[in-house]
Length: 199
Image 1 (spheres, rainbow, N blue to C red):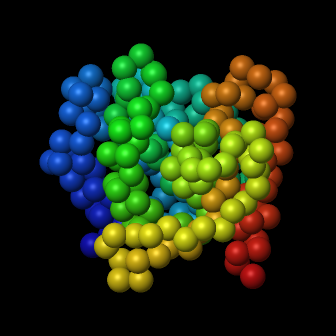
Image 2: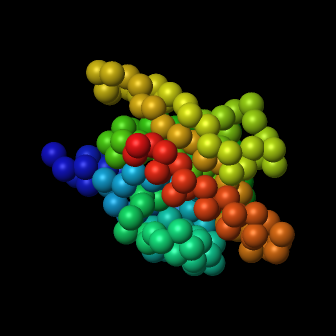
Image 3: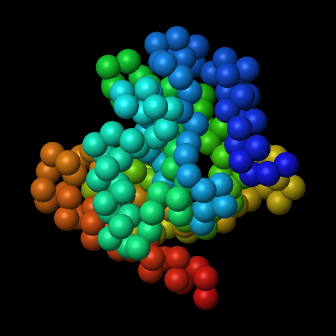
């Protein structure tokens, strides 16, 4: 079974399991993820927004355009990475995902990572970071790679060792010119981490 087929099966399972039925009822569709299932780098945001909800893909609005721009600064494109969110349905009025909503989707996010087997997980925003690094503050650790072991459910080895790189959410940088430069600088860490891992 190809990785893409396995990811499609995860999307079907979310629907079949009726995860967060209230969110599902208010959303247009499920937004699982997009990009290369064989990617070494996975980006994880918080939840789909209006454009994502309509198109069924993460990061296609203004934040997505900025993300594409930043990928360009390190010589990458969308097709080189995989991108997803913790929560797979758009919260009403783009409110922050609630703790129980994030918790409900976490096993499916873990399944996605298990299928893709990335080397680097770039978290976009504090919600995403706190799923993996719950005790840290993004203002203090953004741009600092952290090596972690993620426990997996289905894999016989049960552990996926990855580097988590916490970044500010692109949306925050759109409204704050200082954060924009910080984000661009932090993005430059991604190829450095990749080179270290490949050695």
